[in-house]
Length: 299
Image (cartoon, rainbow, N blue to C red; front, top):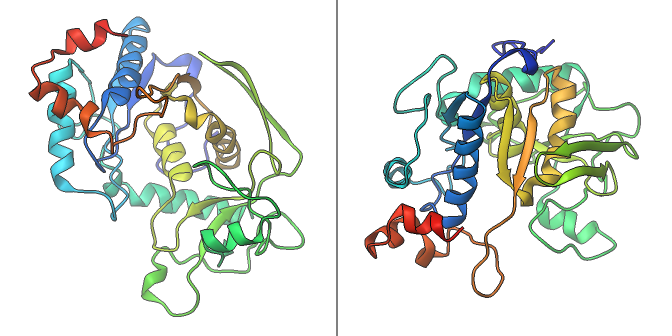
C-alpha cells in the first residue's frame, strides 16, 4: 500500500492502461521527443487506455514560459491527443509539476521517517574530485559517501528544510542511501531484462536539491504513482534511472509501473538529439514545410 499522503494505492493490473507524456519546457521539442512520445501514444491507444500530459516545469533556471505554449502547440501540430493535462484538467491534477509541491513534501517526510535519506553538503565538483577514476557521461556520478551516515540506513537527526535558501549555514542536498550490493532487475518492454547493482552502477542519489527543488528521480516517481501511470515510455538513456526509481517506489510503498525505453534518435554524426539541435526542432521542421506524416514516414 502506498504510504504517501495524497497518493491513492492501486494495483496496476486492476486499472486500464495509463501512459504519459512528460516534456520539460526548457527548450523547443525536437524530433527525438516526437518519436518517443509517438510510441507512448501508440501504446496507450493499443492498450485502450488514457494518455496523460504532464508539464515538468520544476527547473526554474532553464524553464521559460514561452516554451510551455510552444510545447502544447507543437504537440497538437504533430498529432498528439491526450485525455488529461494542464490545458484540459483531469482527476489527477494539477498537471504542472510546479503546482504539486505538497506531494513532494509528503514523499520527503515519508523518506525521512523511514531513514532512507540524509543531508549532503557536497557539490557536484566535490563529488568528481573525490572519485578515484574520472567520470564520463551525463549520468549522475557514483557518490563516494563523503556525507553518508556511518551507521544505519539514513539519518533522522537532521531536520528537513524544504526551502534551505532562506536559512544560514551550508547548502545541502538530500540523498537517498542505496543498499550497496543489491541487484535491481526489471524487464523492459523494449530492451528486455535489465540489471543494475546499487553502489556499483549507481550510488546514493539526490532527491532534494539545495535550492529547495525536488530532484527528477523523486518528482517523477511521486507523480507517476499519484497519476496511476501503468507504463512509462521514455528514452533508453534513462534505463539506469529506472533502477534508482524502483528503490524509491519500494521506500514509498508504491507499486512501480511497467517500463518501455525507446532507442535514442541521433544526428548525422551519431550524437543523440538534444534541445540544442535547433535544426531538428519541431518548430524549425514545421517552418520548413515538412508535415508530421512525412517525419513519421522516415521512422
